[in-house]
Length: 302
Image (cartoon, rainbow, N blue to C red):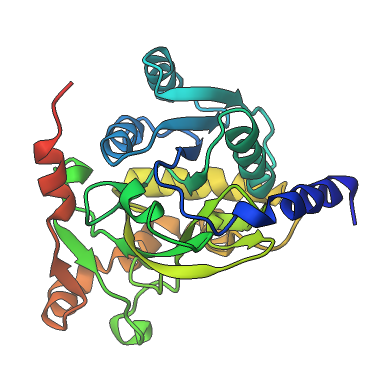
């Protein structure tokens, strides 16, 4: 067992008394690991600030688009508390997110942390994420994910079609990693008792641990058009080839193999089910959900 983990366990033991306590006015920090997210980052920050997030810690992994410019803007506004410019190319996601969590805990006194991706919007039906956090004894909240169907010619916040899990994907000739695959839940967790986040931010190790299902749901915009899809899977695949672990990122590895075989573009049609869209909708796998559209209508424009 490494020394850092032993130190974490020691801290968790000291904090046992408060990890299940109510926190009436919790400090909520969101961590974001980003790379070339100019198409969604600004709206992500605006959405979550309106949803009650107190501040952001951002790790930028070698972005080459306008992402650094957007980060500087919101850092100057005081929303982004700290920026980490990570230049490594081996995609040590778990390590990088863990680093942000400890900064949130130690430097910014966060009571709760959301570890998010730029393509996720964490929505609380109450209108404020901290409403649920302040009324629970749990130290981990499990949040369901909901994928949105990409609509060409519209900004993502105006998309109003969500998708359900398709158990028989072969029937529709869908990709094994289509937007209709089963979505693993994501977690919101306290900082007291925190030990380790998992790859993808789907699970967290706490000491001790008491988890609960949450009404918070995560709207996932993982596919935002063919070009975005191609760039994301190619870049992610290249980084994962250098990653020392073999776990995690299975979909990226799958798509990167197709890219090297010259088959990635044709796979995109199977990822979104475009050729069988009408049948998917008729069978109830595509449905209307304008929750995010309505939320952005109420946001003040910049």
